[in-house]
Amino acid sequence: MEGGFREKVPSLQTFDFETVTVDAQGNINNRSNRQAKYFAQDLGNGVTLEIVQIPGGKFLMGSPAGEKERQSDEGPQHPVTVPGFFMGKYEVTQAQYQAIMGNNPSEFKGEKRPVEKVSWNDAVEFCKRLSQKTGRTYRLPSEAEWEYAARAGTTTPFYFGETITTDLANYDGTKTYASGPKGQYRQQTTNVGSFPPNAFGLYDMHGLVWEWCQDDWHDNYQGTPTDGSAWLTSGSTNVQKLLRGGSWSIDPGNCRSAVRVGNYPDLRDDDLGFRVVCVVA
Image (cartoon, rainbow, N blue to C red; front, side, top):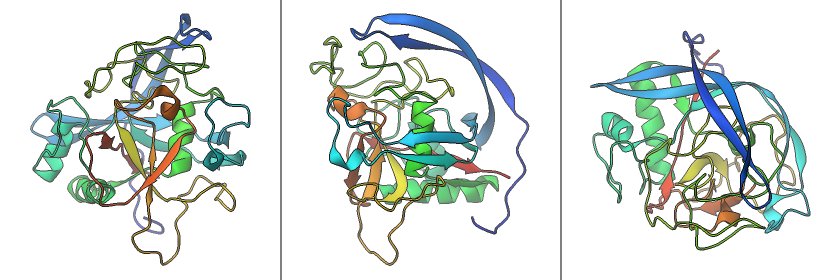
């Protein structure tokens, strides 16, 4: 809400978590204990939404020319400076969606599973109602914020390293990436937070469900903003919107940090969800 009221930073709590990295074959070769700050937004009836503080910084957005399975829309790589922000620790769950919207459209039911079968329009409406309920401004992340948050300081295809395994994320494990192994294909969602987080304390940025972003779809990064803001096409109607992160139903190459997909804002499918950003001063 540019120029509008922004609530001061709420009182923050600290949580501890462990991150992992893997070698080229997908074996865990390092574990690290970390901390991040967050606040819990009360949605009523015992349902809360955990929002993590993401530190500002600069990163290279997009993928390098040599990255396996790289697509042309992932370039050119370019530096982006992202101001600090607050982002959902998890994708929005079915319990959280139900608390705000009064319904649960999901195919794979479970209070702690991510809500899916939500369109971009549905996700925007959720943010609007959540903002009205809480007095804080919630919105979808910009594409730059999303990738910056997913990478959490890494430059590899995944925040775990050069490859990924189904012990680390929910995707179609019958397919492999680089020298990584085959694994499970669960064929449905799992509870949020079932796999190790990244260095910012965010869970499920690879796989589980695709996440809607604010931005309009563009074929590449020529002319993209470099300040972390959303790239919107002035005056366009029925333009495609951005999805990030891959899903339970997709191959691991499409779960990379740099992968971007466009689709129409009224599309609903059982692998489409979202997470929120909270705007605070």
